[in-house]
Image (cartoon, protein in one colour):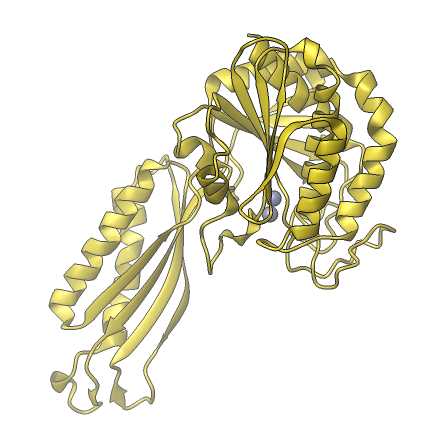
Length: 396
Ligand SMILES: [Zn+2]
Ligand SMILES: [Zn+2]
């Protein structure tokens, strides 16, 4: 639909990608990134270009005639990683790297904006552009990613559907979109549990309340949630990643702490898990005499792809890019994405697509690796896919 226009701007977009890659910024600190994005959007002619929540950007492109509104989201932050890709446009900000491909997401959405701004006669309704900071910040100190804040600043106001893509390095099937109906990423929630008992001499346990014994029972029983409260076909992963307590070997310990994370592939599981964690804590409190304080933090929900949007994407991508550009996924990805928030908080249909990109390297280094770097060419495919899907949605 927009192949020629994308091709025309591609050399410039490559330079823009290199610039974003050279200047990565951490979550909440995407100030330069934000300013650059606003500059390009104003240059291309997007409307109502505005900075929200310090480093987020919202803008619209209105077509010809009344119609629906579709939002396209790109995340903009980088990671605390020291780049070792060896490319000539490597990070100039030591210890910070676009290791999750968000530089490609930004550039792809800017390409979409540029092309749609000069093709307003091809669609009715409105495209909302969401450049979202702080996707990576969701774990563990602050499990609230930028999506929530962007929604608070009106990112989803008046929006009928929201779409996004995430690049991933692939040598098997580069240049394809990975699509899946239903859940496509895991959800996760974080837990910290503090146990307060009563210290006693090691030879007189009856005079104390053993916090380590209590927290040990708690950890073992947590696994019962996974094995007895969750549908085995909708698996849940429990990781208790931290545990500490006690002072010396011959004192009944008065304090203990643990921290863990649940991942799930069905958003309904999150409520079951929370209830059961509390139930187990209360049960062990009553038998141990220790006091349990549970600090539960909601992380990211699963991204649950709308069937209608996926059907539209399959049809659009097959006709615009050929059937070989579509690759249906059997399983969801194991990672999590705060893109889910745009759908879960509004009830609006959403769709996340994986975009398989050729790496510069001979082997695949996973996202977040300091050697993960993907070729510029994927910008063309990503922009064509997003722009065509958006236009077909608005004209349908
Ligand atoms: Zn990431
Ligand atoms: Zn990412």
